Length: 235
Image (cartoon, rainbow, N blue to C red; front, side, top):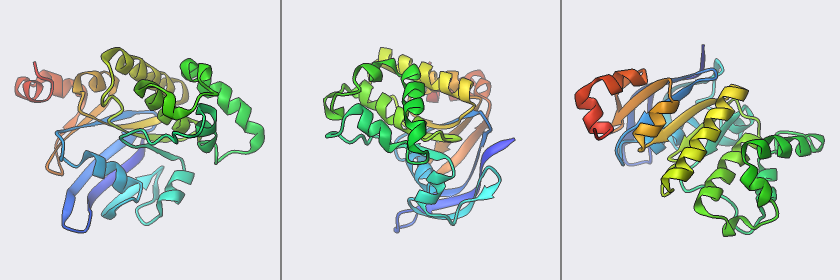
């Protein structure tokens, strides 16, 4: 059963479309991965789903049309967007950043939400009083994802979470995302260039080229095709 269904989605920034008739789906509790080179339209896809750019087409979230809703209403329905570049508030503490993610819930749920998120991100519990701007790059990425989890979303959109991070940090980050997906059945739409590690998480993969889907299927399809594997996985 689909949690997110995108059909015939075109989107751009006022000087022509970047996306062209795109169709993707994320199953309830599933993980869909979007791969492609820089400029393929991956970030625009996430922005279009959230209503951040001009768009045409159909976007259904939990069977409800959201393609005419503003960004803030889509977020209130349970879609959390973690953009590329992390977007933490540098002058606020770790815990203050997390509190911003709990806007959908009452004050009595706040401590419970902190405890739940710190189970996934124990390193952030150690840094709870520290200003976010003084955290390492990996810790800031963890904070960005943790803030999204604080809103108790049904779907998380992740844009290049591994960018600029050391391999060991990337492995830790993906282990946490896998745990959140498995324990809470949160759907994940993941945009990545690090194809090898992303495919280990995915149950469905979409390859983008110049704003179009050129391949759609299970990750075994990509791994099993030698030419695709060489192009996108490098071996």
